Length: 88
Image (cartoon, rainbow, N blue to C red; front, top):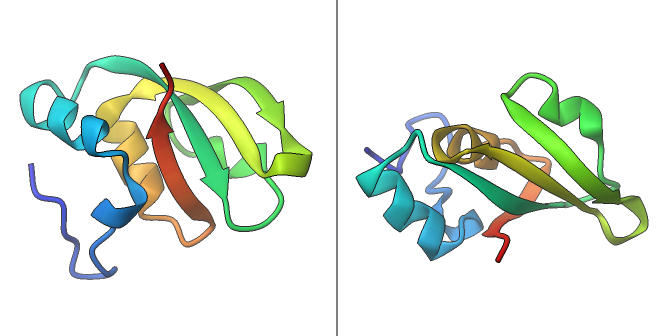
């Protein structure tokens, strides 16, 4: 699985290194993650991906989600996303 995209800069700096390692082994693995937004958290951005919100902390710009690793990687390509972290 390649982690660079010709349309965007290298987005691996937005991803938790553990998500990258899981993606190399099993990109279809479902995990819980924390999505950090650059501005106010917006669930509408998640609608176009197979990402299910678990809880949201809009004032902190965070939404906890459950999704497949490959979907989280695609989500990290969005400009509105600051970081995607594995939830423990």
